[in-house]
Length: 156
Image (tube, rainbow, N blue to C red):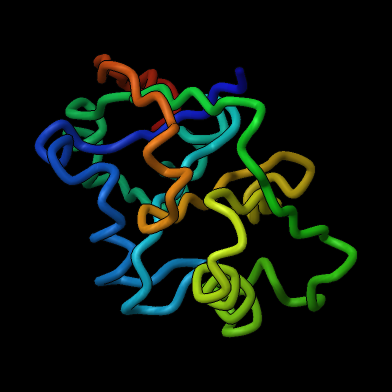
């Protein structure tokens, strides 16, 4: 069984796996209006993915985080997007429509419940985009949330 991680604010636990946040705000791999859930293959990558969005004002916010493990049965189909197939500007901020189009198209085709994508923060590592509307989503084993805090030295 493969493990992935989701880091969120404690007050968001109830909707952590609905895809509502990504549906409302969009993301690198989805357009606004498309519900997906972003997780990372390692807890450290999940922390970096969140940290790049923080400012110094978020030091207190970072103390209210929880880490939620997600166990993925090996039988679940995963589609992978290779860096080789992406436009040269795929890591841009804000995210380009080219990556949003790929993820949105994957959701609309409903061909799998998991999309493995390179991280814009560390391209050699991967995030997973989960489709909460796919039948396989119910097969994921979502673990218990545990407190998570970034070491204060990271804010130097």
